[in-house]
Length: 588
Ligand code: AMP
Image 1 (cartoon, rainbow, N blue to C red):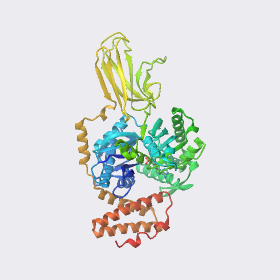
Image 2 (cartoon, rainbow, N blue to C red; image 1 turned 180 degrees about the vertical axis):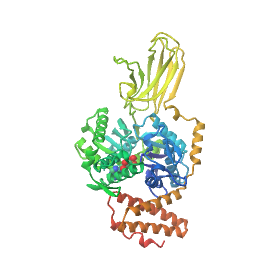
Image 3 (cartoon, protein in one colour; image 1 turned 135 degrees about the vertical axis):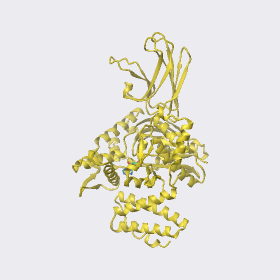
Image 4 (cartoon, rainbow, N blue to C red; image 1 turned 90 degrees about the horizontal axis):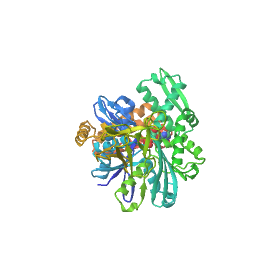
C-alpha cells in the first residue's frame, strides 16, 4: 500500500497521497479534508475525534482535549471524564482516525507514513510524534519539518502563477503560522533543489494566543475579571474571540457579543485593534522573521516571495504586518490550510521514488544549536555551553569533540546535553544526560570523545567513549519516561484500542446532530429555517432505513453544516445560496 503524508496539525489534521500523477488530499468518509485535532469522551464513555469532538468541546470542554500538539513530549496529563491521556496518546487517536479515513478512501491498509512537525519541535516532541504514529499502528518513515513541506509544494506546483522552473529560482520565506506554533524558514530554491537555509520558530505562538488576547481584552473593556471566569466561560469566550478573529478576514469590522449576568456585553474588533491589543505577539513574530533572514545571510529585500502557510496566516493583521515589514505586498499563493499537507504528500512520493515526481532533492537544517555543559570561563563561576552542532547546519550531521576531566580524581564524566542559543546552559533546554566512569586521575588527564549525530528526522543520538578504557555509552536523546520498551508500546497500543471507540458512521451522526442543534440555537429567521430543513432532510433519510440513502444524506448534511458554520463564523451567510436548497429534496 502506498505511503501517505500526514500533516498532524494543532487545530486540524490532513492526509495526502500521490495518486494518478499528482498529489491528492485524502477526504474522510463525509468528504472533509480537514479533521479537527480534538479528542473527547462523551457521556457514554465513547472516545470521539474530529467534528463530533469539536461539537462536544463546545458543550462540555472538561471532557475534551484540543491543542495537545503544543504539549507533545511533555508529562502533561489530560483527564477526560476520568480517563487519563498523554499528548501522544491523544495524537495517536487523531492519527488512528486519519488512518481509518485513508484506508476507507484508498481501499487498503495504511501502515507507513511521513509526518510533518513544526520545525522547532525538539527531540522529545519529535520522538513523541513517532510514538503517536506507532500507537496508531503506523510506522513513521520520516519526520519532515512543516515549512520544508510547504516549500516543497511551492516547488512542485505553480502556486505563484509561474512555471515550476521559474518558481524554483528564488529565495522563499515560509511563514507557517498555525493554531499553536509559528515557524519561519528561508528556502533557497534553484533547479531541482529545495534547500532550507535557516529556520526559526516558536512552539508557543499561534492563533490561540490571539484568541486569548482578544478574550482578555474583551474582559478588560467590559470590566470582567478573566481570572474569575470558570473554565467553561473562558472556553466560550475564547471560542467567540476565535470566530470574530476569523470573521475579520472577510469583514473590516466585527462586533463581538457575550452574555453575562443578564447583560449582553460587546466589543468592536478591527484589524487595527488586533495590532493594539497584542503588540507583544507581533514583536515576537518580527524578531523571528529578522533572525531567519539574517541566519540565511540575507537581507529582507533578498526574499523573492513570502509563502503563507497555516490557518493563522489568513489573518489580515498578519498579512499587513508582513507587508509592512517587507515593504511590499505579500503574495498569498494557494490555500494556506493545504500547503503543508500537499508538500508532505509530495514528499511521500519522493520517498517512494515515484517516477513522475522526477529528481527533486530537498535538504533540511537543524533548527537550533545543540551542545554540552562545560566549565565556564566567566568570573561568575557558572558553567557554559560548548556548542557541538550549531543551528542551521545541514542534516544529517555528525560532530565529535574531545573533553577532559575538570576536577582532581573524578570518577565519572557527566555529559549534560542542552538545546538552545544561550551562553549559560541553564537558560537553554536540557534534553538529556549521560554518565561514563573514568579511572581516577589528576584533572585534565582523563578524557572522552563525545559524538553528536543528528539524523534527517531531527532526532539526536549521542555517543561517549572513554580515551583510556575504551568504554562506550550511547543514547537517543529523549527524556526518560518517553522511551518505551516494545512491550510497553504494545501494552499502550492495546489499551488505546480497548477504549470504547465509535464507528465513523456513528461519529458522523453524532457530529451532525450536535452541530445541527447548535446552529439551530445560534441562528434565527431564514438561517434557522435552513438548519431545520437540513435536519428534516437527514431524518427522512433515517426513516428510509436505506443504508445508501443514510450514507448519502450523512455525507451531504455534514458538509452543508460545516459550510454553514464557516459562513456564519465569517458572517457571510448568503440567503440566495441556501434559501430553498433542501426543501425540494425532502422526498428522497
Ligand atoms: P492550523 O493549525 O494551521 O490549522 O491553524 C489553525 C488556526 O488558524 C486557528 O487558530 C484558527 O483560528 C486560525 N484561522 C483559521 N482560519 C482563519 C481565518 N480565516 N482568519 C484568521 N484565523 C484563522
